[in-house]
Image (cartoon, rainbow, N blue to C red):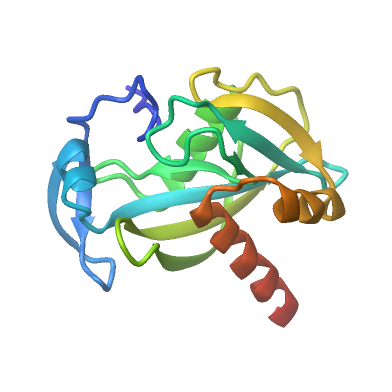
Length: 179
């Protein structure tokens, strides 16, 4: 059974997710509605997808998304389901959002995202290359394009981007620079 993306309007709010501690250890499971309502620490995945030319899949989220509606993102991803590994969630989310099968992801790094007020989750960042057509999930993605890094840098300066994706991109560039 495929689990819908966590903040998709089609995703059941009673879908179970793992609640974790500050060391990313599972404490218990809870319905997603409770996790969101009580701002419980949980797990998410981010997948940076490039085409063979190195361009990055960049998209605008639909206006019906619970988190950052209408904002742009250079990652696909979502909440990790209860008992699901980060790697399995990365593949599932990338395939669902891009409308493809057979994608392979590679884990890069993990960090704890927090906006300081309302949201906090462990963020496991992966990358993938996709050499083929995509059919983005219309419930999730309103617009998309494959952008070069220079084009993405320009858009980050002028477009509204999801804050956790912006932070993941900053850390991605930082990690790549320090190799």
